[in-house]
Image (cartoon, rainbow, N blue to C red):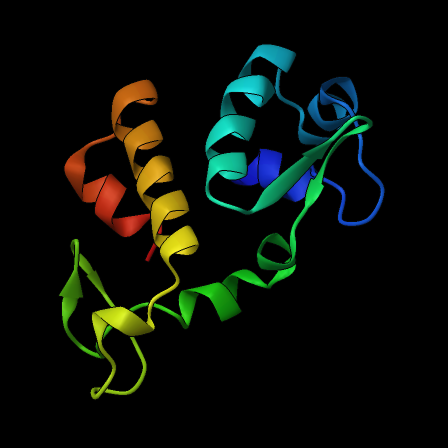
Amino acid sequence: MRLVLEAVPSRRARDIDWIASRSGQSEFVVERMLQPLLANGLIESSPDGYRLTDLGRQPVRRRAALTPVAGVANRGRVTSGNAASSEADTDPAWEAALEAFETHLRAERGRSPATVRAVPG
């Protein structure tokens, strides 16, 4: 999913063929990966194709900083930040995209639970 997200342009909307060639994935895979990215607000659709939203343009480190409570396990991942943070401080779109990626790893890539916990964190 990361390869597809990185291939989506930030300014000019492009079609699935263009994104597939940039990501090195098949059109079928790109089409399947665009749906969760679209549903979670990381990309937007237009008549010309797809492009990143403001949330999708944020660096991964910036989005990762929006995860909850420091030093506390979050679905198996240890997070950093202020210990006074709460669940309300997290970005729901980012959490939903992360959940979709974890589902992809488990269901479509057949990765172990340990790998699923380790990759996003």
